[in-house]
Length: 284
Image (cartoon, rainbow, N blue to C red; front, side, top):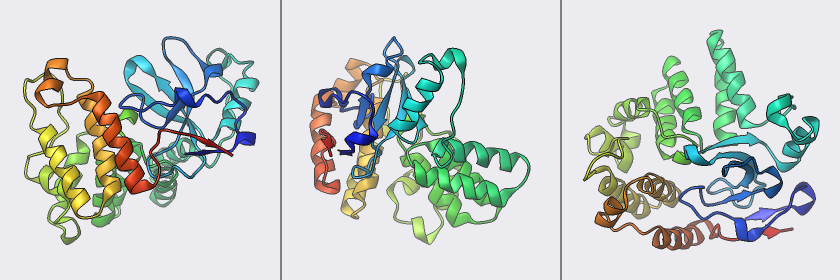
């Protein structure tokens, strides 16, 4: 993963780069932004965007949640300085016009005023600017349904399912849109769509001794690799580990899950299919 030194006014410690499942692989905490209790800001490279500049995300450690915050480290630095390094007390904001968070807020506002065209413009921009947030894709799917574009809605729903669950577990409405997609010729061979439609794959995890969602996700991963859609497979593998990590040790043992083995497997597959193992940062 690449990082331009002149665009990063923070201490960079390559050894702090996280390897997942949580914080997600590809997140680099910035020590100057430590908020206590494990919360902090950090640089993050979305999966498949390893050669692009990282965005800034905020880590909510105890909530097992991460959120996009700023388009780059310079914006974060400006925000901290504006607030005298006490942003949650002063609550002053900066302009970050072309970032996903801003686009998403604009899109929601336009939608609430029934301006669907402008809502679509901004929600699409949010999804493409930062594709790892399921809520963005669900909003796009809903807007596409409003305009009668079933294919767009189905594609958005699939992206919403595959989005990084560390940024929020998908809403069950995603499954509704995926079931609608099952009859489309475009999605007749998609592993996730077809298993959701068949009732073999849901979004229910935890609290049970056995959960068929895990073998179903594994089957989807293998199918995506077979049909040459490795990025979809990597996204699912990432999400599999995220939810599995919240299960009990006994449950993980039953399903033969080892965090260390997963980290090695994920890194090797990333190197094979993206050309980057997501273990190192190249400062240029």
